[in-house]
Image (cartoon, rainbow, N blue to C red):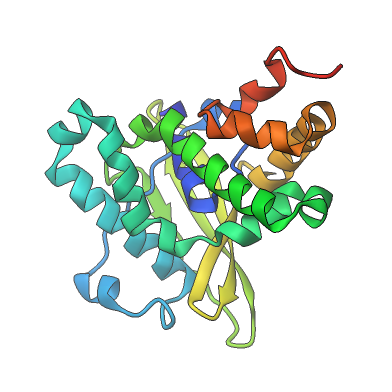
Length: 232
């Protein structure tokens, strides 16, 4: 359950996720039941809540139908995330917010490497966390959005294995391709803010290229500052 929160939050928000300690301490599952007609609706016409619901349902349906296969080989979850979740979160926007001032200083190659490396690092380390997701632990509340609004928050409530309820809310913004997620807050703590603080400290110690290299090697983001080449 703890690993699940990290994976869901990070894959939906990419280029950054809830601080590892926060995410691993919480746990969650994206799962709801919606009519097939809603799933088929164009994302440009869906509400922010519809986006969360439909992507979750499609992911969980496939997990449910092939549970044993994914348990035997958790790496197969990665293509599933790419297929159903990745199209609905804004990787570049999230990366810009996570890196903050360092995004402005980074060149085009560094930006691209960071986005790719961080996303794949999270999938590699935490992909198995999706294997045991079930469709009965997430409640998505309807979201009323003014037609002229370009930002919205989708409120959800997750029931953990111990029956505790966790508030997990998605920040979304309107893009030419429709609504996309870029941040998630678990019990009021934003993953973007948490990782921006962590990565800022790591970049000061290691440099951006070194941080990216560690991510490309598949190292867990929270563990990078513990590596031998930290410049104290």
